[in-house]
Image (cartoon, rainbow, N blue to C red; front, side, top):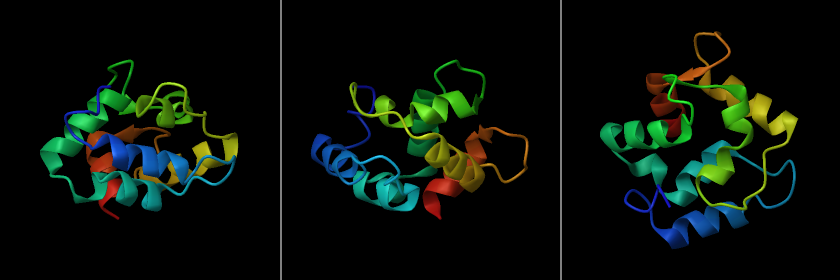
Length: 109
């Protein structure tokens, strides 16, 4: 798994378990449980690059929908409502995408 060098498997599993049901995803709780909230800016940049699957320099809505699957293959996709909430939480400049600095700020909220 790409996050293996950044996060503990048990923490990822606990975070995913906490949002197993549809519409139960809470990004603040997820980032805290998986250990991302306590990571350095450099580590969060690495995490951003993993989630930015098309290497565009931004995390777009479609990548957010598959957000949980970047942590573990087979994890559920976010619902449309969860995706929109996550996008709104991270997109501080209103361009419809989350950049690296926006991602770091969102994780640290």
